[in-house]
Length: 465
Image 1 (spheres, rainbow, N blue to C red):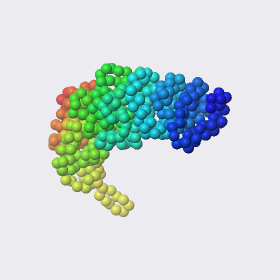
Image 2 (image 1 turned 90 degrees about the horizontal axis):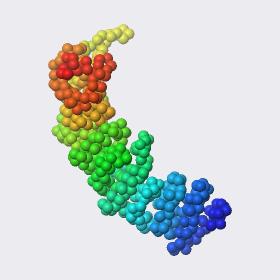
Image 3 (image 1 turned 180 degrees about the horizontal axis):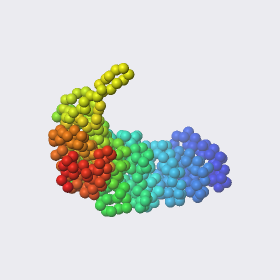
Image 4 (image 1 turned 90 degrees about the vertical axis):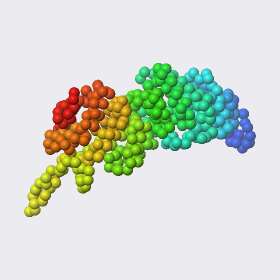
């Protein structure tokens, strides 16, 4: 083997290693292949990343190393090789191959060894360790994280609080070493749902069983003004969207950090999934149209306990209001306003009556009133900061359009007398909570209606500046 390595005869090397491997399996007993495995890895590390040799090493090292899986081998793979070789993808593939071929006992022993290594200083070493822990964790799919049950398995990292803390420290140390001012190590737009980085997957796996511990470590990292603090805001937001029913929203410190995280990553969060999304969207669609007390109570509870998730779906309210304003419902129950009189139109030799629908001439007062009540129940510091990016301004403008139609076109202010006081209160809350964004909004223009400020200060909005 050494002579073929020296001569670079890799085809002969492949045949020789295949014979050694087959012989080891046929003998069905422990075979000491540690010296052979070490020679292969050392030869590759000193070969300036020879791709022909890399192919042989990736094929045989994982298979042969299962016969001599000990701390010497682990030291060589995770520490020595990481210090000698800069070929990150090769080493990651090597680690994944080892996970595939090593026995359960070998994997468990290696994971326990990893959790005793306090001297990991190399970022690549930590990357390899994290890849190994993730690949051997038995976590089959990222979607499994949405389960409410704790992650019960033989995964060493979740078997005790101490192990969970140690594994999370490896993640944090890795981020510290890799972090730069222009590199936050966050998933790209195409990777936010799938192909998550190993360090983020490992964080999710640990948090599923030790959530309070991991959240405390994340907030501690933010408090320390660490270089990876911006990334930790993102991680905290992802954890909340993944485990919305168990993460401590009622804890004021956690809630404040989540609000800040939502502000920092508002647009990103809109592309992420949450297990409560479908329930909340259905609830918003039924708001004001269902008389069931349980639905109203659920909406109130959501506004208090899951306000961050609810605000992500503000566009549903905008669509609901715009649809209702068209007045296409056949029933007039609960509707306020009027329809324009039918016009006569001639089609060929026939004269027919045509009903012209004008947006806002009639509306369902229960729906529009319920939306205002619901938005008023949401935290203003979140609704008028994070909500700016999710569409709350569109909802506020829907009401100005409705008021304009009834005041300026129909001359029927009494039709909006129940809505306008609630709306003015909500807008004042906006002004008091976020004066900068309020000023920007008030100077914006609503097509065909005028500027927001003009509408607010006129008899349309009756807003006292």
